Length: 186
Image (cartoon, rainbow, N blue to C red; front, top):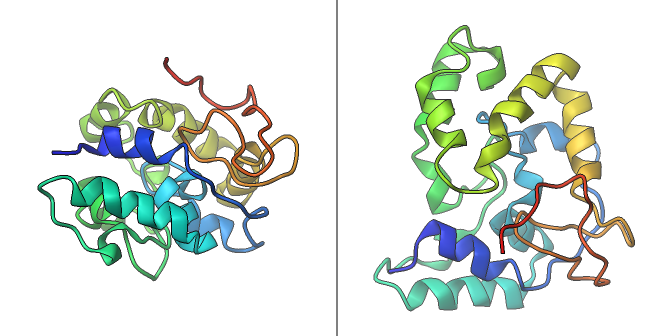
């Protein structure tokens, strides 16, 4: 059975192209937990309509016992109004933030940082390990500014193409990922 960790690491090597996220949409890509959906491999594959990347995702999951369908992998972002990837559909963090805060963000919760979010931060997934720092920064600078900062941070330093959480280099031009991103474990 393929795990989420193996999936994210496996899909990272396939191509994702595109420019910076369109203005005004950035805010919906800020997940309640402090992740930036604009760097998620499933989001990037869906939005770029990259058939080879979507096909690779399907091949990885069809080899597992999960028996997911294409629509299980497609995503329009955690706080958007469209489809959600299967991993994010039943999210206790998002549900809790929606119930407790008008903004639907953990950074605005009176219980921040609760055990749910600290556990998520410390679950061993490299991209989860920055959510506490992200949420603190989000609270300090505000939603709009933080979303712009993240969009710029996850852009290729060479061509401004999109880089996902586990890509070591830009799939569009081959430029190494920015030092502003968390280091990838070997």
